[in-house]
Length: 550
Image: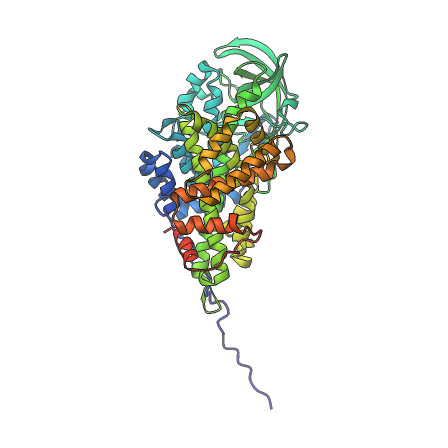
């Protein structure tokens, strides 16, 4: 006897227990720690601007633009179809729209145009936009920092600054004189030298006098040139008196394109919306910036500011990954309750949340010191040390924290259709840009050796009345400085110890007790290599709730 099979359809693809898409958020108004950091850093007058920016950068449509721009990498068209050299980089329209948004919002200019606390205001603004896309923040960072270097050639700075500081974006490949706004890039690194800029092999030969002083012709190869679509580039080359800084305009005064041969675009792990390239100078016209033979010190003034950018960019990457993880774990249920309520998960999220806030606090403090450096010697000393310190420590921690946050999603976090996989690929980059970890630690040692007063400035920053923990931390650091300044191998340990002590001092002064106490337990009292080793209690729930962008 046979029986008919039951072919009635059964539901096989009903989607349950998946979080909804992250909604549009105000990345400033919804971030308590950021608002507090802005107010204490002297940038309160920028709050209306930051509030508007937070709404724009956190809009769901902007997040979609970032996704599309990173999925459609730039393409090099070195020649047209007839064989003429064009050296044109084609970007997806989504990238151009993001560039219009970020340059239109003044991420490149606010440090120089704000009524007060310009570098702090700009750092907060960059923190907001880096949560949208990191690729567009590479050209904004270099354009922002270029002002410092260009002022070493007053005539050139007077001509370029109005276009640099204009809040707009004009990608046309024409002379800066006919553009409403311009962008600036850098071409420093050479394949044989890497971080050792003294090994530059590019040669500069004097040419004719120009409108902005003596012009040179450059010949050489640059292994990394960021944002090759920019209107001008700071670069280094050898003259008879040593390594000298130059500025290369992409288009010459007569409208012709300067010789700027893009050999290939780098196929990068992350930062895919932005183009990085190898270029050749071959009789390329350039203008001298600063004193001949003093190119590296001239560029260090600019690199100091781009290092501040790498620190805040890494802090923003951590923050965005944390926001995504908090959203996911609030809506995902496992073992009969929300994932965020599971004790171990709550400990992981709280541990990362307090560290994320500490990274923001350290970087904003460095930006504040930069603002005050011109009129306060103590702040000048702190700026010289805290900027590279933040660059080292925040960038070093970003890959670790983002990897842990990716795990909060399970398999979903490892899929490229989500945001966190992109952040994971992005996280290591800032640790390399503007000096890798070892280079930064050597810079910190040079500061301590050449400017002994930095030690007193750090002592005043770290010691807090009534805090035995911080006073003990300083005593240990004070002894370690003597040991390490004479022996470089301990430089990383010293940098880590100072960074954690400064972070805890800042949280002790300004954050709620449950944040500062959790940070102390995680990083000082009983530091663990494993994130999420904090004991779950009511205070950790408060830490997690404070970190939620609402």
